[in-house]
Length: 378
Image (tube, rainbow, N blue to C red; front, side, top):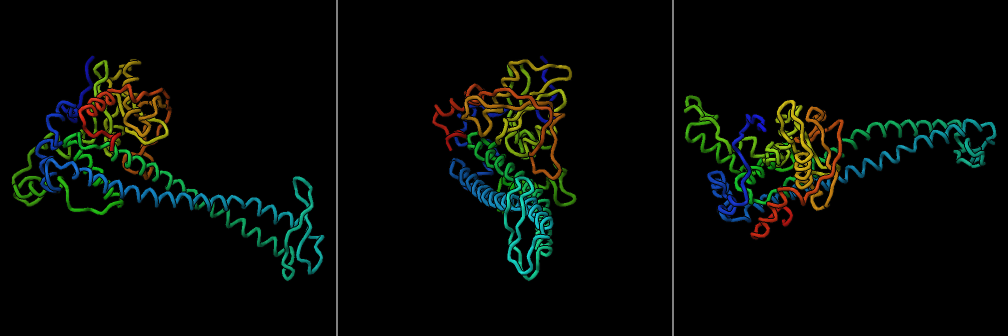
């Protein structure tokens, strides 16, 4: 079968286990060397892990803060939902105010549903009408509070989903992916800076690359400099840095997002109507597409292959068998105001994905046998 056209770098493939074995430091060429120059030591795996842990700590703090918000909003909504009971109490006072005795501290009323007699406290100086009016006012305020807090709770819940996704993407990066992992980590760092979850450090291979471009007269910078050369595949601006690439049994291409930017590219830029989009159900995970030519139909074998990858590259990777949603990319949309990489889907179907049966699981087992760190061992 003819593979789909790949305008963003069809010649790029993820580093195989063999190529990583040939590059145990994970330097991955010039970019990896720059990473070592900026952070300190080409063969020092602790450098990568330190940067990863710094970002995980920032995300963890954001998760804790957001969790407190969600708890507070839910409490406010629960309290506000009592407005119907408050209004009913006011209605009962008005219905039975004729039985009130002047100067009494309570009024006997009868429950509208059960007919059971009960007493409602009344301020003897103000009387039953004033008491009812105060309760009506309280009920209106509670109703307004619920209406105002519900959107805040929805936003906080979306933020929680986003933060969980970023945390998952960080934990999947082990440093064994060479320069791809290094640049993917920096991409997440830049994303968190944009989201104001971490402060910019002024470090990074991207900054060093730009500094070298300026010093050599290339890229953006001084007027009159040497025109910038075309970007080489594999640099930080290559979209495939944020995407893993696999080949399905039929030869069709399967793309898997490495991080939020990769997920957004896979779902909203690269994926076409004829492709098939996958994501594990109800948990953080990579966005996956099985690419096809117009008019092609995906075989059951290819669908299973992609679903297994989606299950493996997810937080449910140890689940044995997990539910995986799949649909056409035309039914995948970015919600209004959504964070990078966040989407909503329509017309989903569900199939079982088996993480341990995926090609990625086999590769990880090979790396573990070779004594390398894997995503599940950090």
